[in-house]
Length: 225
Image (cartoon, rainbow, N blue to C red; front, top):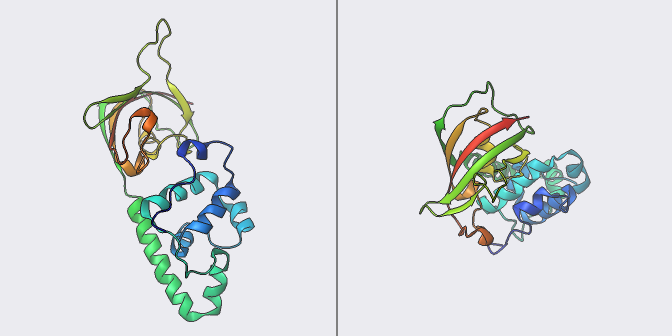
């Protein structure tokens, strides 16, 4: 199971081509029972799909590959986890142990994987909430100083245009989502984002971002809607 590779990219997960059912089915097939219990993904497929939120599923998908809690061949099906716990006290004890290890791994995975240095204080009164539309100017570079992306430079006679998206919904890397929800309108900051909350083991070949790269972004939160 250690050779499992991600089935979808972050960009694909953000689109309509990957449904909640697709994600739940893949996570139940691939994730260990302790991981599924910690993320409330154990049980009948239809029931989990009905109650799950896609952003949470996307985050679980990312954490599965960060923590590598993959299913082993001797584990019972995810749909039977609760039933087995109730029927067999010994299995209940084992599952509680798996649950605890899963929660411990989840807590470790949830530790902030970025730092923020404010370079200019903003004039806004509040940070954006999850789902708010934000407008952002940015320049991204590697630790060696090599710039890989920016939207602050004019293209010919066309003025620079900020990137607009709904924050906290998985449309961008997690480091951005988390950091931008601590900023106010007009604020500028330098974000240093560890690989786990950037592009991880995949990197982005098209943007010349190697695997396991720590990324540095100079960002300006232009507007919140």
